[in-house]
Amino acid sequence: MNESLTNLTDTDAEAHKPDILRIGQSMTRMRLMTGRRLIGRLAIQSVAPGLELSHLDVLDTVRRAQEVGDVTVGTIAEMMRIDPSRASRIIAEMVGRNILRRKASQADARRIIVVMTPLGQRLLSEIRAQKLAFVSEVVKDWNPEEIKAFGELFEKFISGYEDIFQAHIKDIADEA
Image 1 (tube, one colour):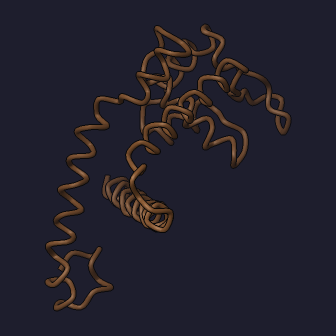
Image 2 (cartoon, rainbow, N blue to C red):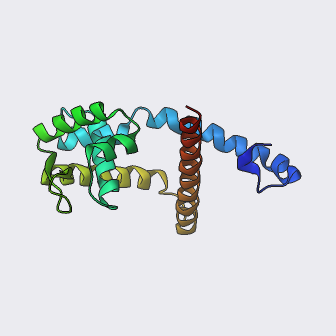
Image 3 (tube, rainbow, N blue to C red):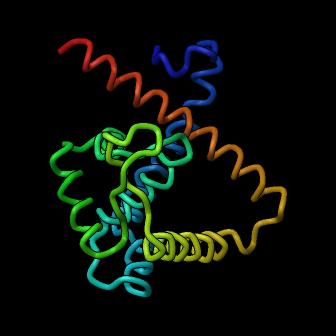
């Protein structure tokens, strides 16, 4: 039996199999739609034409990472699962466009950290506004209880997905 179903009995797992398969099929449909990155493209078009989608990924990574502490090129590379040299090149482009800037860490002046500029914050705000408008349109016919329940369950699902993904990455690294 799949480890992700260990909390279900064999009977429960079999009974829920169609629902679990439906979730997987919905994930595929969502991946195909989000693969086009419509929300990111709209944000770029309205705030900073000429940016690449990878720049938005870095901005979101900086936003998430700065909640925990200083953000370095290494932090960004690790969170985005890309090579540090690629992260460094993208960050250099963003510094050149005044979206990010480098500065010395307050905790350790020898360490260089990455922070958002006002333009970077404006771009991030525009992305959030685009996402809010887009998702609001999707759920416009839902009642408040459905929106709340879906938000909680979707967050729980994504957190579990990330946990399993991280465990598999760790297993692969341990085997290497």
